[in-house]
Image (cartoon, rainbow, N blue to C red; front, side, top):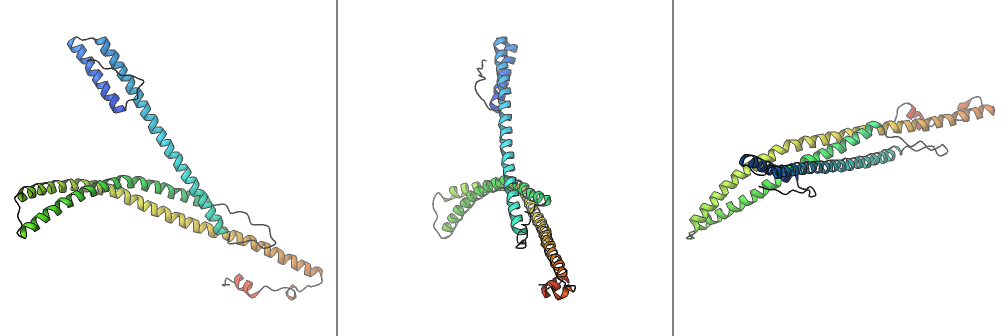
Length: 278
């Protein structure tokens, strides 16, 4: 028994494994029945090397695919983080600086918001991953259900026709065939539905994780945005206080000891200082 395997080719791991098995069997046969063991050993060595090459190639392909997926995930995360930054700045920037004051610093997005945003991305990828086997199982089950429904409909039509008095010669054989097909299809549907049911919990868990991540990022953003807006209002407040202080000093320099005769806070400002609404 002779095999010709070329290392220049790129067999799959399965094909290379099968070729090695055949080469091993050929060597065993040569040893058992007195054939040319030298040729059989060369064939076995070539098959062994071919399997090593195929295994390494498959590993490289798997590693490359994983690297591409990781790069895509990093890019998705980077885009999501940038969107989060832009949204945060837009939300916080509703608090504007005083007209004659220096621009307020661009607010930095807190790490908790970025971490929550990245968790949403991870949860989304996990959900997509969980949905694939569920979708495949559901599609396969639905296809068989459709065939079962077709068989049951055809059988029901024949029975209805015969009930109405229209009996044809081939009806019994066709009804038997349809009944047998329907019974077998029902059995297959049960097995396929079990595959759907088995994949469903992973999807449900991933959906809940996605919902939890979305709620977490919403809560983190709301808190961080308010904190940043408070900081900006404090900066505006400090600017206002500094202007009032400058006005008081100017009044004193001009002989106005009673500052209240020069400036009094507005009713709105006094209400605000007392915690009221304006």
